[in-house]
Length: 161
Image (tube, rainbow, N blue to C red; front, side, top):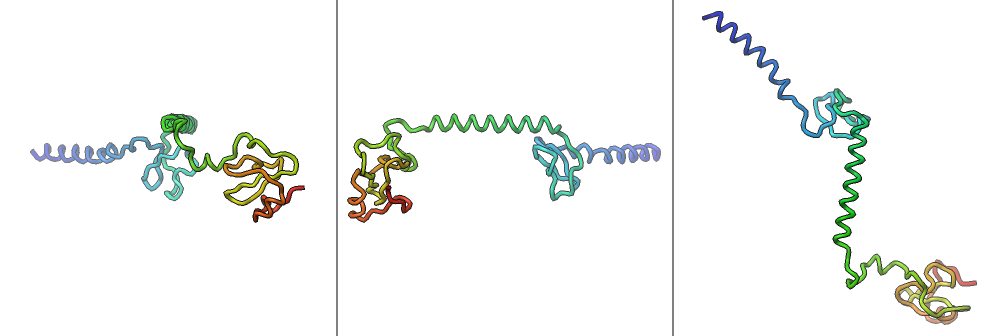
């Protein structure tokens, strides 16, 4: 009976010694283990265990993690594009604030030699040939003298030549 107890004790001790190793499996998605026994999900080994005494064991190959990261990034971008397409406003909706601030694609009709475009909402006038000439949301053509008489100032302080 004593021999049986001794053998059982030895078998139990050996079994207990191997159990912690079985319990210490890496969490799902981890790519490596740090020297302080924490796990990382970093895509590359470089800098993965910074602040954790370095990498103890690396589970993933550098190439496969870089490829999977690129694939995940690509799929995330395509999903985002699909979401934006679903949420795109219809033609009947009013333009957003950023769309209202953008210039018109073509200048407003009128203008010509000696005329400036006065942005009536900002009281700034734009000379012919500049980016905003005839393209702001609100404005009108007039001579530079008329614009100055209304208290307007030149765009970026540059008077027309």
